[in-house]
Amino acid sequence: MARTISVAALQTSYGADMGENIAKTAALVERAAQQGAEVILPSELFQGPYFCTTQDERWFATAFPAPTHPCVTALQPLAKALDVAIPVSIYEKDGPAYYNSVVMLDAGGEIMGVYRKSHIPDGPGYQEKYYFRPGDTGYRVWPTKFGNVGVGICWDQWYPECARAMAMMGADVLMYPTAIGSEPHDGSLDTRDPWRRAMQGHAVSNIIPVVASNRIGVEEGLGAPQNFYGSSFIADWRGDLVQSFDRTEEGVLIHTFNLDFLDRHRAAWGFFRDRRADLAP
Image 1: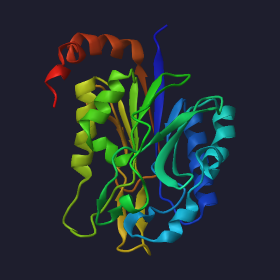
Image 2: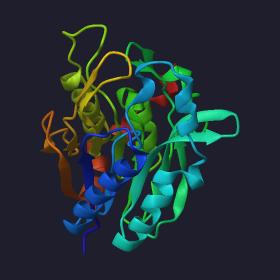
Image 3: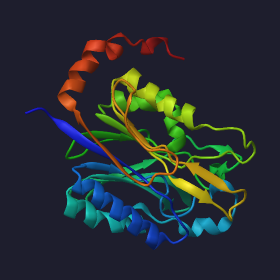
């Protein structure tokens, strides 16, 4: 029997109420599991609106320690009941430090560990350096029940070294929870296609499937309105979009990959055999 992994991306809008957002996410997780998904990816910081559009100290009160974060404690029993793994994106408080993090839940609901976002953006509409420290965990790959899952967070997805590092650590699939949309300083700037192409390139260069989950909808009241462009997708090892949403659809994307085939194909291409890490700066 060939080893396979069935992955899912969730895409939806989120509002101000954390309980409602968690319930909405849980319902989509359940729908994905019913359709055969094993590793299910919600989008970045689904606990509430994307608050990093401005600098406002009130949002520090919405961070919690990873093991007791409401998103984690709510999805743990669901992961166990549905027998699925879930990378849970949270706003994490660790003593005086604050991070943009992912808590990896395995199929039994156990916490496998925490990844803290390595690359923190700072620009109009995405003022994350005010809220988050750069991650101190290094890149992470988790041996879930279904396969080895590497997770980067949003801005991480633009960096080829992040994807390569996770592939070198043995990842079978790369996942990127995301919150990205309009650029408030330039209404003519649309980053959707470059955003996709960057990750499609990671898929090609590492012979690995890539899953990206973005939110949708216009969020107002936090600085200039942000229109999140969705366009979540699952790319195969060729970079082809085997499943994708448009800018406004809500729901789940699911695809199954043959891990034994990917292992052989990765070896045959020779990217890891021929790489020259000794020449890198």
